[in-house]
Length: 95
Image (tube, rainbow, N blue to C red; front, side, top):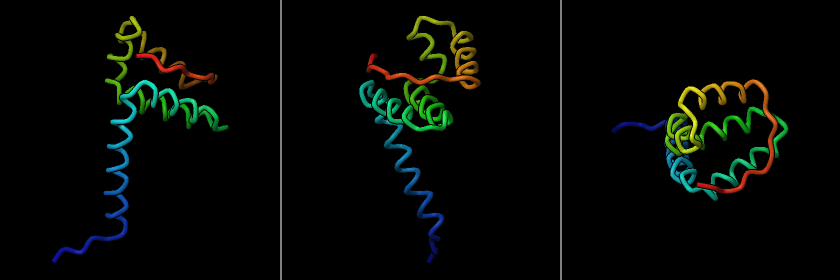
């Protein structure tokens, strides 16, 4: 019989949570609330991590850039610039 360690159980629980979060972030209203909550943290890395999760859940940088009527390169450049310097402000849900 195979023995499952506590660490392996934790990884499985985190994977299930990550999958759940990924699906929830596809919803514009949930994503906006998630970003607003992340923006309340003092560490800008928290917001950037949340932003990356939202972008990934909504199709990646190329898809997000296309929805914003930007080229993939402009979207990627914007992401890179925002990673270096960021100011946060409330996000409204929008498709």
